[in-house]
Image (cartoon, rainbow over all chains, first blue to last red; front, side):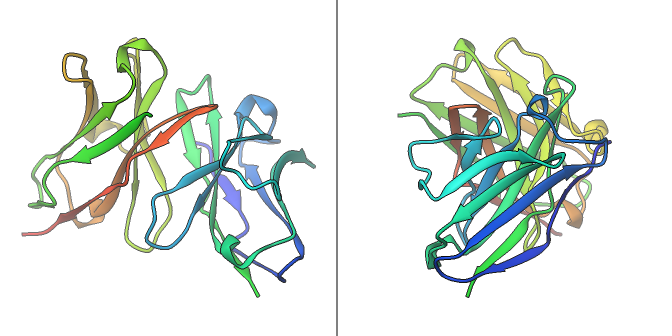
Length: 111
Length: 116
């Protein structure tokens, strides 16, 4: 089955910009994989920030954006805040959503 | 406001069957969308277990397919997870969720420990 890959950890300075990426073992990630980006803070349930590549929920801070970049899904954080320190998971769908896979997660540190 | 709430035993013995229920309020499961189970072992990442569509079609993680089943009780607006032959490796926080574009809701999760 497909494996979804993410950077294990990244660090960004307060106010800085960082891009997290999400790749697939089956080849390039496209909009057909319906990429999602999910944030999880310690001790909390996950919460989706981005759906369908680049769409934001009402609760998604404007500083987060999603895109496709170089064959991968990407989550860009512009103007990082201390409260953005969290684990970020990518979610991809395959074969008309008959198979869904999470990436291993990226631990983002704001320091 | 759509809400999902997991319920079930917090402790399950090895080789037994784990059973969890997700109660949905604020929306009828029969009206649409897929409804799924996700788990997270302590200190580790998220793993998709499987999903059931409003039509009743089910899809499972191939690595768990032989031990897992997901069903719906439309009269109670609930969907359930059964996982057989559990081991300590199945100890996790189990989340129910519906992740369908803008229609996106998660339960708070329930910790299930597999231990004798």
